[in-house]
Length: 386
Image 1 (spheres, one colour):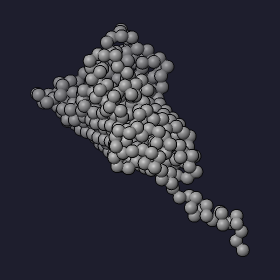
Image 2 (image 1 turned 120 degrees about the vertical axis):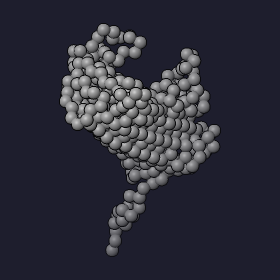
Image 3 (image 1 turned 180 degrees about the vertical axis):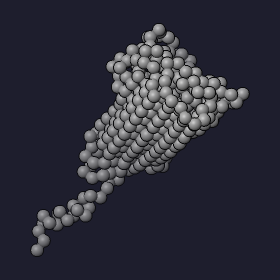
Image 4 (image 1 turned 90 degrees about the horizontal axis):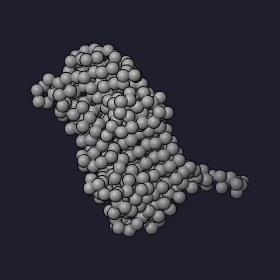
């Protein structure tokens, strides 16, 4: 005879492990783009976060108006945020004020954000800043702080007030098939910013924005980037680093099989011209195509905006073991390769292999080297100055 306990255990086995779905519409959200859906989204999150089994928060087609929203963990099980619609920020940029973030995930493990679009309506705050008015700082569109085992896939981010996607103090984050769009003159709209994080992968993504396509900050380790289309924008930038004296280094960064089109920079490493304990090491760039890029390859260790806070100082960041392999295409400026390294901490272990960069106007590009040492192999154009 089967006991009651056995029946309960059997029912739990059959049904208890089934994933749950929480549709934001059932929590009061309206897909009209006008009704504030922030609280319904937060109620759906609370239900999913407290679920003992894997759950999905579902956002159907339509437009959902979201103000600042913080989705906080830790949660009891994995959560998938599946978006078929568009999340839009308030048109009045002052609604987000100085919050710094629009949509924030914090201290959450096993979170997936799949599909959908974000429109942060950044035009108003860009115009305010360009006019030199008293403007709020603005908000990053999507931020992950202290998150482990995250996935962002198939997402489109448009018109961010500041950075589109921020990965900060995270572990094991996979970004794939994202599309990031903002005007070429929109200020501080970095596509993806990674800092203080380990094990981040970015693949198969298109980034067209007004600042760095991907910016890499202090404390970044084991970052893999593959099949990135960048431009317009400021390229893929390690740095700026060395703003602080006690600063974590950057190491084990790889970018392969990518294309830069009409960007201000291609492969850039920039550090402040001031004392620092930081470092950059074990960086690999391979199979990169440049199309009308202003600075295809550049290391700038004399970064000092407006000559404030560092005039006459030398960068303390130690740059070593940086490899450039099969970098080809056209430069929009005559000096296609720049290695402007620190006088007190020269760049070491720079490796050039099969570089072919030409200048659009004359077909003859140039290179510039200062305080740099390394090796080269294969065909090197412009002329090697190492």
